[in-house]
Amino acid sequence: NRPRPEIEARVAEALEQVKLEGLGDRRIQQLSGGQQQRVALARALVIRPRCLLLDEPLSNLDAKLRIEMRSEIRRICKEFGLTGIYVTHDRDEALSMADRMAIMEGGHLVQVGPPAEVYRNPATPMVAEFIGETNFIDGRVLRDTSRVGFFDVETSLGTLRGRPNSEDWRPVVGQQVILSLRPEALSFEQIFDSPNRIPGHIVNTSYLGSIVQYELAAGTENLKVCQMNPAIIRQPSDQEDRLMIAPADVVMLRK
Image (cartoon, rainbow, N blue to C red; front, side, top):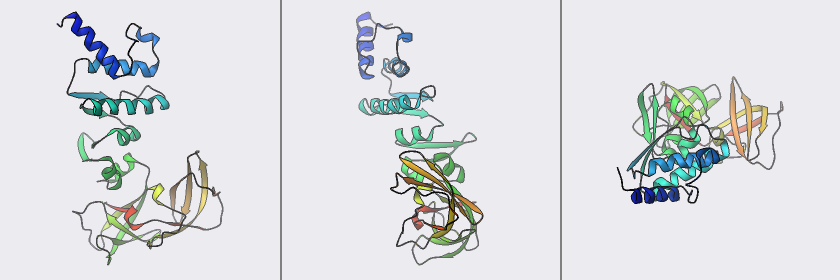
């Protein structure tokens, strides 16, 4: 039990932390969805914890409120020096909020690291697919190249040059691997220092405002391609297009 003046002071402090000062007398039903989430956060903060455990706290909010509350939770943790453990199946939440991510599969930790590291160097195909859109291509290692850390891989798209997902792994010639090609890394523009060229034709175009998504038929594969707000939007056609991708963006995964 705490003295009433201390309780009132702590409640006022917690409401101020979540920017709800002046609303302490309202019933929860009188608050918006976002404000209700802030109240839940204030209830956790009022005991002055050193660590916050949040289990999918934003799952019932609409998209706009989720983005707003993601920023708010991160601000509070940073501002007050709190450790936050945040459980989510939403990869956008995980990438935007985390200093370090822990990916679990079947109750086991698969990979731990900063978001950019996990995104660019996924430990397994499951991690690569969970953390973002990708294209998986089966391949066989042909040769080590003159560029340190890069290998030529034989695939249904032709020979592609890529790199292992870890500096600790050195594939051997003939080894079966999986290549991960992120849609945003594939480009219709010339990449002058890249030997990776993939011919194909566009079979579907989806305009989403800030981005345009393409589906490109390339041999036996259908590739997902993403462009940020291009000046020219390409349409489905039988005319051949040519994709390019930098070797550093062709990530080799163990099969």
